[in-house]
Image (cartoon, rainbow, N blue to C red; front, side, top):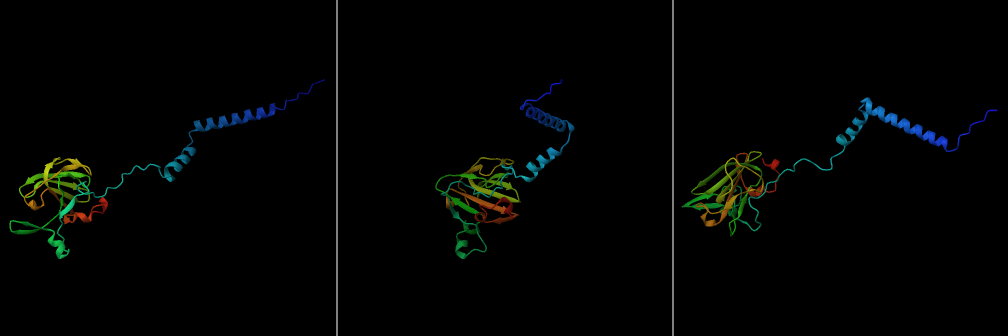
Length: 210
């Protein structure tokens, strides 16, 4: 007489579990070795194409800074605005040896010698010293913008130097043409070949200089 075999209750679940594990393992190996790119495409499309990176890599656009970093510096002589009032124009006239000249920049004054800094990144295109204007530095920036720093007592850069915004170019001083102002910086700004009032451009984005 044959004896019937009876499986213990815990045997069947164990067998099923082993079968499922074996099936999953075989599927993983198959996908890994088959060379299919469906999963890779799915992940790549989700992470790179649709989601915005948490940390941005683009450089923030620079804004025009002032040519000094001392808060107590004031304006000694304004830029001559042809459309300005008569009173404003009187404050922007340079008198030299019996001749009245229209001020082509802004003169910044302070009781002490102060650092003169670059308003934007750029390249030094000229460094010179003249009898009337003293030592001066010219820097060329993007968008056909040129800044000129005159009446310097010291110069810290040379022609051809690459400079960054806020870098010290020299120190304020005196010059013959602005002798009535004492220690000061004469600053000029040219955009697109035209002299402009620098006070109207501080804080503007570099791309807005036109």
